[in-house]
Image (cartoon, rainbow, N blue to C red):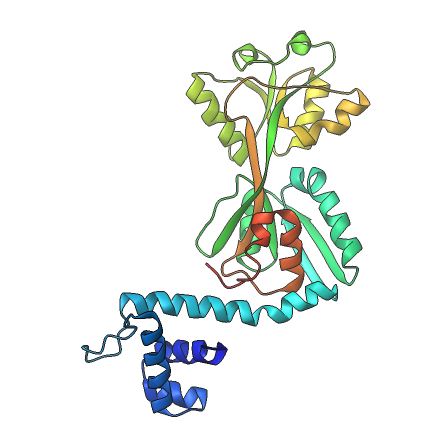
Length: 303
């Protein structure tokens, strides 16, 4: 078996005709039949149902077709992978990200990528979560970064990391001495939250419902940057991603306390089109986000 034999089988399945597959590959119809029988003999399974009046694959044939397409996708992606290995990447890479990830998780990754691949022009659009999905879906962005990533028709979701959700509070607050704080202790407190349609808020609402709790928010805002500003201005509380509050803690503007509750984690990750576009800069950037994403790279067309 060789690359050409895999291509012949795919051509056969795509055309449903031995003669057309032979024409597409520049070989004889007899040679196509011989290649198929050689594979069947090698594995001891039938690939084509010869009792049918039309071209039909057996269950084993469907498995072999899937394997052939995978192998061809890997082979076709070698040029891209060689360019990545040489560091000879050029072109543009468009990212769309929710604000919290763009400001607090993305910068070190961007710095590393730009240093390694100065020939790639990277742009980042700051968007709301739903806008990120739409930007990737219609091709305005090569990659989206969101919290609680979810696959959709035509879109792949890759969870890259999990981040702790913590309590942000001003110095001198009565709960400042509590380590950790419980959700029950937040009942009746002045709490600032995200707007109800934002994924992190939706997750927190589910956690609170499970605990039989409910917050009365004094403000509901669109992103964590305005939430933190409101916490300081209103001497209130908020639940935020841990990385988003590091700067305020270092400056002494806010304090951070862990919350003793289950599911106080915020998965964040990447949204790409399905199948994954064979774009060298995109594949290399994905490899920096997560080992799981890197494992996908040899198969850019995989579903």
